[in-house]
Image (cartoon, rainbow, N blue to C red):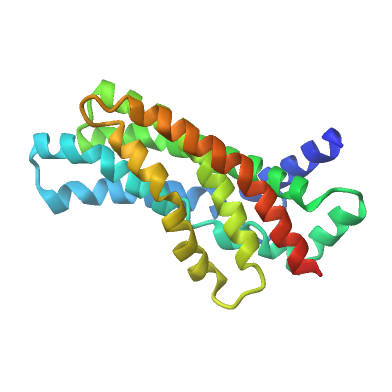
Length: 223
């Protein structure tokens, strides 16, 4: 079973990076990063060159940009495999829907989380964050991006086969991810170290629950 899981993760990663010849294309991991950096680039033009203002608000902007960037790949995570019959093939081979969802979550995080954390270094420079703020942001993103990936797969499974599923997925993901945004941005405030602990707890809960819910949604959609 572990070999099948690793093979599925490898396939998902190849598709995300445009190496598998699938429908997702190489934009699967680039678009969230490009969007993330675009927000960080535009924001200083909106608020002006005040370094103190950028330093106070830049961390929150990074968290908002990360949350919105996580929405972009949702429509490509599950629907394409359902349309092409890959989900049915996996189930016939003995993989449960929950295991499929777990593999998709791991691969989605690997293609989305680390690139976003690297892009956060550039964003921190654009927004005038100091080294301590950048470290807090990186720790927060390391804790939160697995949960964002799990939420993305779950929402993709819930909205598969629905008309306008991509737009609906974004509307569903935002309120569920708000606690991550609150705890992550709160960790940047003076004395906000406990925000990282709350962020870790919320992320662990979502990462554990979402693959189970996603698997149930995929199974219900097949019946």
